[in-house]
Length: 139
Image 1 (cartoon, helix red, strand yellow):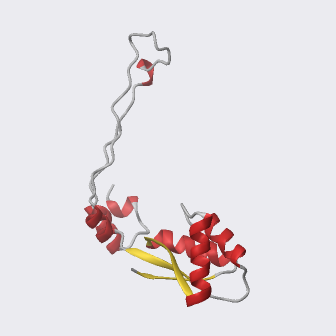
Image 2 (cartoon, one colour):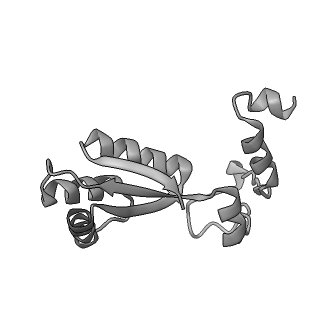
Image 3 (cartoon, one colour):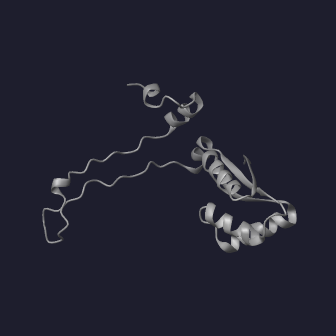
């Protein structure tokens, strides 16, 4: 079985980026030797699964960041914008959302997140579904 059979719907550029990633370690646990009783001397656990070390520069090259920009429109209150940002953007606090809402109101736009393209598109769809005007652009 070759790559095309396993991943038939992926374009060549994405396939090349995936080939450049280091492989993950796969660990098979033997459940028959694993026990939950602490006094059991035969208790053992398989190896720890580790993620590959990918430096920030390599990750940025493989998954270039995009900016998620919310544009001003007079149809939403500050509270509407804050709630939408907090519910959609991972790690967004109410205080940070309020700062973005103020920036949107005063300057016309605010970069509310930077993320790989797929996540940025997800944020764009979710915020647009809540009635906000959103665009994404390469960082």
